[in-house]
Amino acid sequence: RTCVCVCVCGSACVYVCVCVGHLFLCLELPGPSVQAADIRRCVYIQCDSCCSVISIACAYRDHVICLTNDDAASSKMTFVKKNISFVSCSLSKILFGLLVCSALVLAIRHFLHQPTATATTAEAADNSHGRRSLKEDVEGEPPFVEVARAEPRIGFSTLDKLLAEQRKLRNHSPGFPIKQKSAEPLIKEENPPIVGGLSGGIHLRGSAGLSNIKASLKDPSFVKKIRDLEDKRQDLYVSILKKRGQIVKDADGSETIVSYAQVPVRFPNNLKRSISDWSDREKFWLNITHFPWPLDPSCQRYSVNFGHDLPVVGLASYPSSGNTWVRYLIEGITGYYTGSMYNDLSLRKTGFYGEGIPADSGMVLTVKTHGFTTEAGSHVPREEQHKYNHQEEVNNTAIILIRNPFDAILGHRHLDQGGHIGLARPEQFQGEGWDEFVRIKASTWVNFYSDWLDSTKPNQTLVIHYENIKINMRHSLRRILDFLNLEEDEGRLRCAVSHPTGLFKRDHKKTTFDNPFTPAQTEIIRISINKLNNKLKEHRKETLPTHLYKHFDSIRTR
Image (cartoon, rainbow, N blue to C red; front, side, top):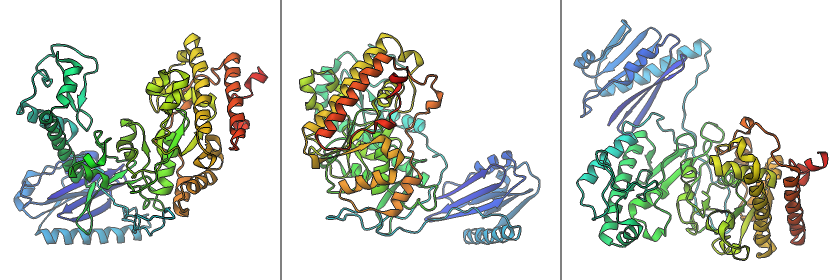
């Protein structure tokens, strides 16, 4: 397949990218007088389906240069500029011409003392990232892979249309009609059940109800139909990734999915089950390599991958205590994905692909848990709450992350109302509802951490404090590596410290208040802080850095 891509960097330069078969070439031209109208015409160049006609256009100052191996193709192109040069040649001459042009451009730019910005492929890394002392399962860092940034020709709207056509050809079980655009459902449901892997699965509606849905899910033929549809959907998405250039072939013939923080992929959401039940098609998603720092030349070679035979260790925290942030740092310094007891779509969409596989798979390093503070555990009596802390699931071993409860409770309110990076409205920090929220969460905060400390041995947990990580990140990350029995990698540590902020960060500058806590609420939280501090002393753990806690001393100054 042959494709042409033209990209404009403001008005400073033009990139012309050509891939023929497995060969990929980039030509960079300065273009101080390039107009956007010219570039749009370059983008819409069409090649014959058999790829016998190859037309490459690039704008250079006042000229638009066209390379084509078919004279007739020139009549199909329209440009605003009048000065157009056409060169008719064979494919090999076209490629040779591109190389010659590249050399000429570099020579001209060097003569004019202009800085040259080129996209290069970084060297393959050594066996330099953190390793387990007893087991080594990764031979070395994969090389940094540069992929096309252009949007796919087949968008997700097109994908959904293709799937809709496939569904029309299928016979569905009675009582479960697929919603069509031209038909209204008999019974409207606010949240109809969804079946399918990638977002936008099949909406099952009708009068049969949830009991019939559960019964149908036990029917092997119905389950097979659902899996067949999901397989088709995944196959279509894989084809999109290939067209983007985000699936590359290795020397041994295997394929790797390439992901960046800026260009993530859509990891399926139906893989949170035993890997032994996965099909070969589904196991392909384990070959995903994520580059967290692709824009930093000194850090772009470091990647994150799934491991094997990794110990199951928890990353336990109260909500909004920096769990996602610490996961980002752990993935950066170890090269392994982190896991979760949950399956958060918003996290998978940003590169936390370990979120989408079983926590006990042995392929992820540390497993996120908020215990009884969320979901079903938050509604059970106090004496039952410890059963929802996921301690057995993570082998009663965890990194315990603690944050100033004033900030954690504020963040929890924002999380409930605005999601991972959204903000709650100012009025939601006032009145009886806010007062009750503070009382419940202050108690939940101290109880959650007390449960972990009381039910585990001292050597099974590592207590780290959010505020200490911010002050001395390198020291905190080295403590985590030591607890996980992993060797330090100076390069990864340096890159993590140089890029300390992940994607999930709220912009608190938009908040209109500084301290929403009343004196009574402040005193309630202070009591919880003192209780947990005494518990940490009892178990000989690092005590709370209250001197760094915002609002902790505010009651004394009111």
